[in-house]
Length: 286
Image (cartoon, rainbow, N blue to C red):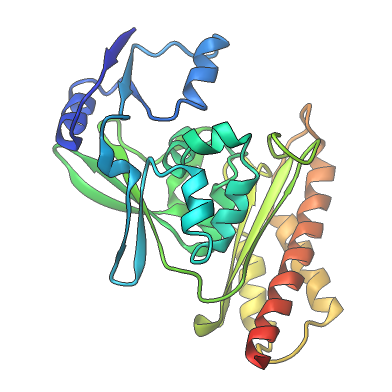
């Protein structure tokens, strides 16, 4: 196994162009586990830890640009007020040690259906900034990024440089079902983001389909039915939960059955919408 260790972003892009089979590594919280357990044996590792710019974030024209290596702990401590849904998801990732090493960029690169950051990225309408030496920069919408189980829309010579999100304009919530309260892979997860200025709601489902995905029919239902100044009707909550469950296409595995996952998605959808709506009405009254 070759070990490539560039010191600049330009060197990293050149290395990836010359060795498309090289697997990027930063925190190593996914890749090294797979290597240690013999799940994969890449021909080369592309170590990005020496590229300091990947661990920074900026506010550009009212949107946050979060470097691919910004760890979960920083998102929680420094960006939680602007990105509450992503910060809530980050708090559920592994142990403090993992949160100090793991990043949203790494989560995207692994593209696991169970990745905790995927649902809030979908609900918030994130863009993934990908770049290659010869093809320049591409901005990939989160809902076009996931193409299959642990597969993504990156080209072989591309690397993830950053994730772009608008600061929250309304309440956001993330919910996760696991076999215990902490340090556990999701049986299923759900995220919601209210966008009051646009009169719409964003959703994200995790570990409930071959890829993370939005519940598009449920979102469209709320656009038609929500009165943004009134309490939620129980029938509306129930229908929203049903539509979110219908968007899932889960499997039976050692962590849970498909039927349980559909049921759990419906419950999480109802609860998170109710929590977010309570906060929304509270802001209006303040």
